[in-house]
Amino acid sequence: MANEIMKCLRDWGLDKIFTITVDNASSNDVTVKELSKIFTKWGINFMNGEHLHVRCMAHILNLVVQDGLKVSAVSIERVRKAVKYIRLSPARCKRFQECCEDVDINCKKSLCLDVSTRWNFTYLMLNRAIEFENVFSSYAARDIGLLHYLQFVEDEDGKDEHGVVGALLSDDLDNVRKIANFLQTFYDLTREVSGSHYVTANSHFLKICEVSCYLKQLISSEEDNDDLLGKIASNMREKFDKYWGTPKKMNKMIFISCVLDPRHKFVSVGFALQMMFGKEGWVI
Image (cartoon, rainbow, N blue to C red; front, side, top):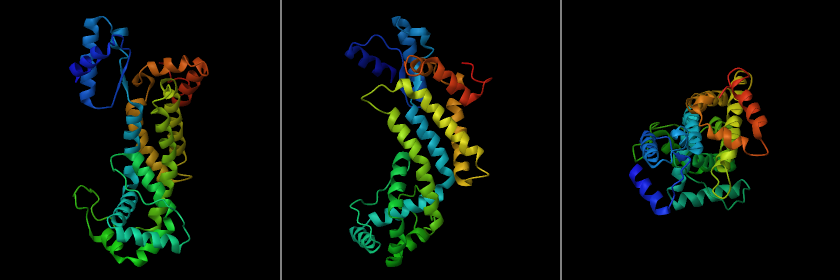
């Protein structure tokens, strides 16, 4: 991988490489180390490659959210299977549309099925399902096959770790509504840091701080407020701390890029570090 990247850099005429952003795979860690060795031989390895490797923020967020969704996996899986059952047949889709008309929902949108390994698609599926919340009960009354599918049929691909998940209950829809509202923050944040037509490096650290404070708030209010979201946040926090638990785990470039933004400078960085780690634990 490192050799192929070097071929591309030569073809593009690039000989000044400051950082490389890759997903969090062990093969990528090895690739960046090999690139660092090559850059050192070329005499272009700035700061001895200490800050060459920048972990993809969007990918870390994906890992963090995926861990959180495991807490309410059954409710999500019931909605997923219900959506899949309806979408499997044009006749069922037509019947679902008739149910929409029965409950006075005039909407040209349709149910969407997610990709289980991509949480943002799961968010879109849940968000759409909530819009049709009243339609599901009406549809279940018309098509007994839906209940049978949820209670007795496993996925054909055999990859469904939950297998038979049971009937779709009102509690499940309540859960996915809470989860969808919760995930919207992360969905919006991922879109912001994944932009390709504007600079994003200067905002990464402050966005990480937002996530940290949001999770901390949910965890602290778990007993008094919402047990489900508190458990989800606790799971997410464990994964969050693996990559961003201390300033030393973060690439220093995300601090420098924030400082160079005239809107933030050292004041914002210092404040954000104190919010995340307290007055004693934020030394970089």
